[in-house]
Image (cartoon, rainbow, N blue to C red; front, side, top):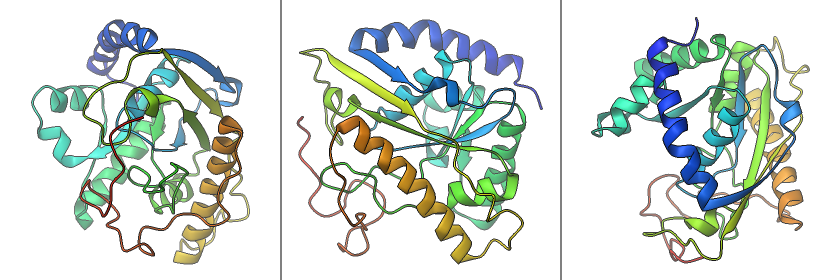
Length: 252
């Protein structure tokens, strides 16, 4: 399945309008783009620290000739203008029902077969970790990888949260911030390939993704990550939505 003409045109228009804005908002310090798979679709697994993360990752991928497709909440496709853009660029709606989940998987497979990058946040939502480290993951990215055999590439970024902090209500433009992005090595799932996709296998693959991602974030931050990954369930927090207990302040 090739990228549709409508999708290519819409991405082109977005690039013309959005890239200059992103370049003005933040300086770029990007590395590791040579690790992006060539001539094949793949799964991108980034960390998730602020609402503008998809724009940052989309900007990075598009600048490196990778068409980005995101798994996005189905409700966003009903939002005026945004919904049209999501549909026009072939983004993938995520529906929590069984039938909807199957459709999402098929759409994700189509995006991979088109040769682009399907972006799946392994944490499933913005991290609940107070210090913004990757938290306990969900198994969607691992399941997609094991079912399709597509390469999984961890991509860590840091700096966007200084422009738009998690759950903030405004941008913080001055002084000018830097967007740092680093691509990690594709994650090796050779030992899991062909095995029945059980909970144990999915948990193992998910932890492998989060371990690789956390190591990249630690390198970007030049800090040591916590010994134990933050688990919202252990902290009696909701795993999604803004109304979890004690959200952080919307300031940098």
